[in-house]
Image (cartoon, rainbow, N blue to C red; front, side):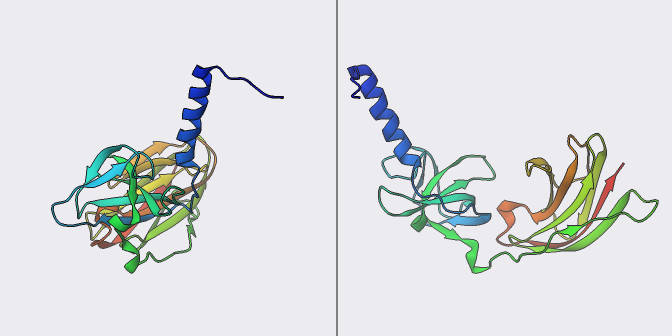
Length: 215
């Protein structure tokens, strides 16, 4: 069966197909890494809506800006590798071509096995410790029920230490560097992560002591 489209509908279909072609690229695995914008001194680096030089540039960065890698694609338009990036200080995000980024891969993050937390008999809290450097993370797992209250408290040798609390569905419940307490919305395994704040991962490291409580 052949369909006859009016000019207005045909124009809409063509525009929609063109828009979808920007995102039907070749997604690579999501990355958890920091990078530095790299170009000639004094230049501006376009941060585009889509991974193509024909896409509008809503933002720009300058050489030396630190960004967090969200994901990457091989563009079907120019055959180049593009990275979707996030500027931690402003929240701006967009796409930057790979030749305009210097990844922190020269010192790749070490992988640590997640550690399950258990409380001593009669106790409702546990203290763990360790060290993180660059993009390293340390994860702690504990099981809790909806309606319980979790608390975290961290001290350490670096002002850039950060704690993340992640829900059983992997969404983030809390991110911060101070003491925290909150009522848990779901039952299951919670991940508590210690890391260096993303914008300081190139140069910072720190030892820490983390106390996690459930009541």
